[in-house]
Length: 242
Length: 242
Image (cartoon, rainbow over all chains, first blue to last red; front, top):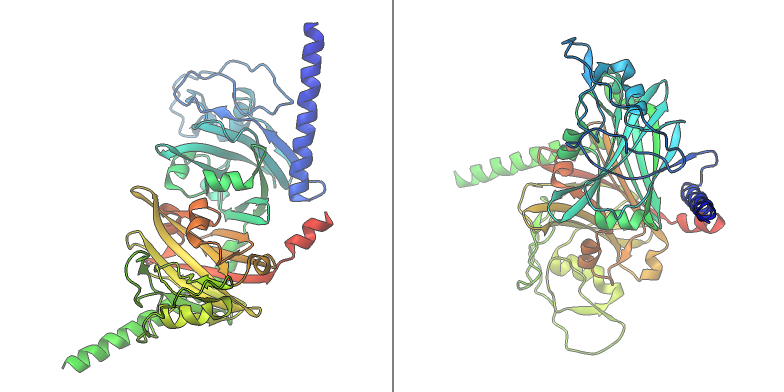
């Protein structure tokens, strides 16, 4: 009996997911665009590191334990850049992606343009929605955060960070786009490097910022679809020419 | 001596204006785009009606006194739609534009695409920057408002209203664009009718909303350049086809 109940639950979940995919596709109306459903995670930055992060509803693996490194004092080592956990890991920039994938279970998606569908926008702050995006030979970290900068007034902050150096980041432009109900909001900027902390980008407000009321206008049934596109930066060249 | 001092002041003002025009043009890099410098006005909604509104630095005329109408109870009469003052005027929709121009000294600009350059963004809330925009055979009211929705945290709200009926407003799409320092923010929506109150549009947050930090990122020397474009709405048709 329990088995049948669970099966029925799984089927319902799949139908719900399918419906969300369909809705997000309809909103962006771009055939071939990958829609990724991203579930929220309560930010546990100062809690012990464990895997509860940014899983899609489909994949849920058991993570390996966090790798603790001895203090080596190698200047090429970078700390863990996961925005969710205070993790003692450090390693070379080249292995940050595999650390985020394996230890923090952050999914990675391929494609020049994807739709990030954040579910359960009503959950209380602080909450994060996180995914990695592989594009143009690099990996990017997309962070959507619900946070109360002013007590009692949660806001949504969305930004994209390059898993690379600031010099590499300067070569790209990312675009976040919300589109619903005859309203459209676009944010374009140069991604920051993950070597700069995502917390400071958000506290500086140098990202897409949404009040709760705007977030509700763009949400559909508690889910917010964000169209994401990354291009190699032409702004620099255009500005240099002017 | 006083005359020479005043002349010198006027020349300095003109040089400053010229420089602001040049900067705004450079930001938007669109040859032929009209740049309009808009000075702020403290919102005096519940103070007596007088002319202090939305004057450009160049033109400053002495306004005629407010026209008081007897209560006629004509259902076709609409109240004064000036966002700045609580004005007892009422009249037909066709004469709202001339009322706003003559009584509230709100300037009107022609052109499909204009740049609205709001000065003195640092002034304390509540402050409004207002202009009328004549385009595609209709007149629109552009309102930028600095307001403390949450005490101690001023935000900027920008919206465009059609001086016409809600049905007429549905035929248009307006776009507000900020572009500076390798960042770009675009808001596109259907304008509301001035028959709906601008205060309620702003309190609903159904407009372009900027935190102080984002407004500073897009400002140049205390002035914020907003690119404005109005088009006949194709969103409806596109959505209907989908």
